[in-house]
Image (cartoon, rainbow, N blue to C red):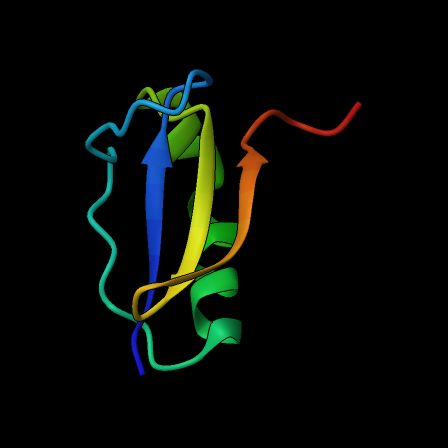
Length: 68
């Protein structure tokens, strides 16, 4: 199983991330990586992300905006 992130603008258009992630072996590893790098990804042009396991979307879109 491979866990991957898709990086998008707010309209759902895919964008290249500021940091290229690896394929993760667990959901927790993928989420930890995003937790460490979300600001850089947002500043690099991604507005939201989607998490997938292989070809199945698990959740998203999830905004990269800071919580208020």
